[in-house]
Amino acid sequence: MAIPHGGWPRAYADEVRATLRAAGDLCITAGLVLLLFCAYLLWGTGAYTDREQPLLEQELAREQADPGPQGDDGPKRLKKIKLGQAVALLRIPRLGNDYKYAVIEGVTTEHLRKGPGHYPGTAMPGQKGNFVVSGHRTTYGAPFNEIDELKKGDEIVVDAREARYTYRVTYHEVVLPTDLDVIAPVPGKPDRKPSKAFITLTTCHPEYSAAQRYIVHGVLDRVELRKV
Amino acid sequence: MYGWIWRRLPGPKPAKALMAAVLAGIVVAVLWYRVFPLLEPLVTLDEVTVTQ
Image (cartoon, rainbow over all chains, first blue to last red; front, side, top):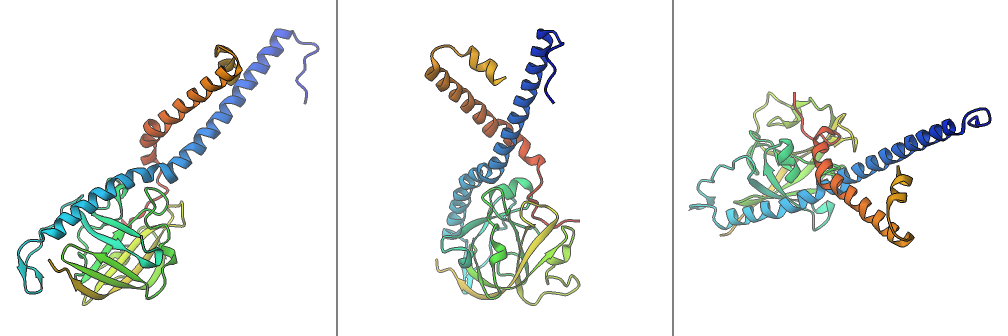
């Protein structure tokens, strides 16, 4: 419909036009800002992770250089890792030879911004029980973006302070965000006592959604003690 | 809005264009480094943990 002009005073028609133009400008601006925000979520947030990861790696390197008093089979007693400290280096050869993330202790929003986080209270690397690590899938460097490409038998290498633990993927599952069984000491069997060392990786699913969780389970395959 | 700004920028067209680009850059930088980091925690599209 053409904006009636003929019968109306010119000033009125100009005013309508100016208002419509301003509204259009606002809509375009809002759209551009939203697009920019999406770009920030996908790429901008990773800059923070990229800055924090080397710090965690340095911390880990210091700990590995000085793991404390030595026994016959590795360090006698390891210092307890506090929240926010580096736990281990995570490598997954299937996701590339340079795939390497420092795992931080803790899974709060702030911890997970810095890298994949170890659930406090679940087993430490190599211990009997379940070593549970959560990581972002689309934001903050998206460390777990491609864990859905892991296949049965793939290696998950955890370089802890005292040793290198190599796990092998056993299976994956998609669960509700409330399904705590997946992080039980024996994954999926919360009543069992663990006799093996398991690993569990969790991230969101589907991508860009918080509706479900993608879970990868593995079991310890071999241990190489670190020579100091 | 954009027309209003354009008309108020002084000088010939190339100078106007340069100033407009700088202004746009400033707006983008403020959004990217100041505003978006504050908004980001409100978006929970990337929840990765299992909890009750």
